[in-house]
Every structure is written in C-alpha cells, then in structure tokens.
Length: 316
Image (cartoon, rainbow, N blue to C red; front, side, top):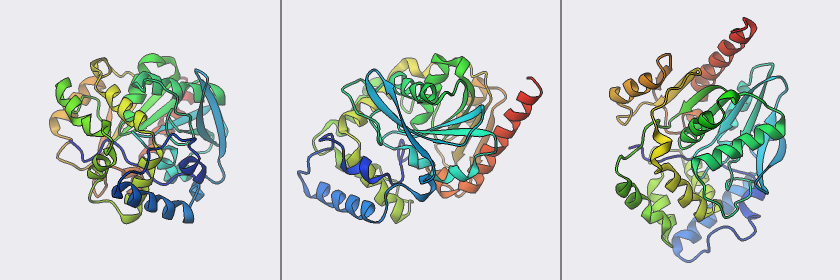
C-alpha cells in the first residue's frame, strides 16, 4: 500500500492554534518536538499566498460549521476535497489553474482545517454531506469533484448520494477498492492511531521522499486535527459498503504517482468501473503530486474542464 493515506501543506494560523481545546495534550517528547515544528510553521506563514485573494465562508451541517474557500464566478464549478487529516490548502497550487468561467470551492471537510469538529461519526457519507453543504451554501448546483487520497472515497460516496450534483470526478492518488480486504486486518492497522501516543504512528506514516518543508507542514497538520477525527474517518474507510463496485457513469480522470502499488490489475479494475476513464500515471511525483508536480496536474485538470465546457456548449 502507499506510504500514506493523505498528507497536506500548511494552514492558517487561526486553524492551528484556535481549536478550542480540541487538539491533543502534549505528554511526551515527540509531541513537544512536533509542537515546535508547528510554531516554526505559523511564525513564518499563515494562509498560503495563493489563498489570500479567495473568499472564506462557512456552511452549516447538522448545526456545525463547515469551512470552505471560494474562487471565481460562473455557472460551472469544480470542488476540491482533501485527504485524511488535511485541509483545503493542499490545493494551493491549483488556484492559478482555474479556467475563465469556472468557480472553485476548496473545502475543509468536517473536523478539519477551520471547520468544526463535533462529536460525530466521520463516515464517508458524513464527510460527503459536508461537501454538499458547502456547495449548497455557495449556490453550486452541480460540480466536478476532485478528491485527493482519502478524499477519493469521499467524492465516490458523494456521487452515490448526489449523482445529479456530480458532473465529473478527478481521483488523485486515491483508491476505488479497499487497501486491505480483511476488516480485522484493517482494524489492527489503525489501532496505533487510537492510542495515547498516536502521533508516533503518524510520524511513521510520513513519506520519506518529501521535502523538509512539506514534512514540517504534515506534522503541524496532524497536531491540529483532533484524534477522534483521524480515527473515526479511518474507521469509515473500513466500511465495506463504500467499496461497492457500482459503475461510474460521469467523466472520470485518474491521476496517480508512479508506484508499484498501482498495478496493471488496479488499472483494469478501474476501467471496469468506468470504461471511458482517462487513466494517467505521473512520473517524478509523490503522493502529493498536485504539490510537487503542479504543472502536470493543472494541465490534466484544465483539459478535463475544457472538455466538459465543450460538451455543455454542444448540449451534451
């Protein structure tokens, strides 16, 4: 399996330090080191400059706030969904790639980023409903859904619940079939994240091929995401029903970093779900290919959006 389920870049100061007691307690040396890393990050950063011109908004889901950023104007829309433990700024290099006439929403899933973290079960359905709440609040009736890593099963579930709201799907470094087939094995794999010293398990999951800056940002992100959210969303990934092999009828673009994990058998599986899928493997990219190979990612994104615009103009 890949070296991680998700990973993410730096976030705003307010979303890392103003968590109203929801973050973990610092009880060992590792946590102290990670906190120092967080302090270094927010001291020089904040909201990434690519997000400085975007509008920050809040939707409501079952009484809790779901934060999202909005960019651009127009009837056509693309919605970006981050992975496990991340926030919307993982898409910071995509803000410059939005074609004219398109709007973009960059969503902080429930429990992540600036969104509230209520005592809920963070199932893929619940997270997908958070995406839907953001779209409704922004007045977006239909959109292309872009999911990264664990955001892929989120947008897959969104499509099942709201097919009429899904114009297309872009799956970035995320799977359409379970990482392990045995529920008990999955339960054992996520057990370290339930422990008091769960940050040690997070540390072991950080890919070794990332830059120092991105590694630092990952650590700070993990400190800001409540443990209950990390655990509950992993439990949600273990639910068998989200891996049903129902067909994907909307346009599908799959972007994967070159890795032994993405086998020819997996490609054949995806093509069975969506016979007209655009399946691409990107060389010289990590799990965060939208960050370390943004030109290749943005080119593929623009091509799909242009194709969908042409179809709309033709009345198809």
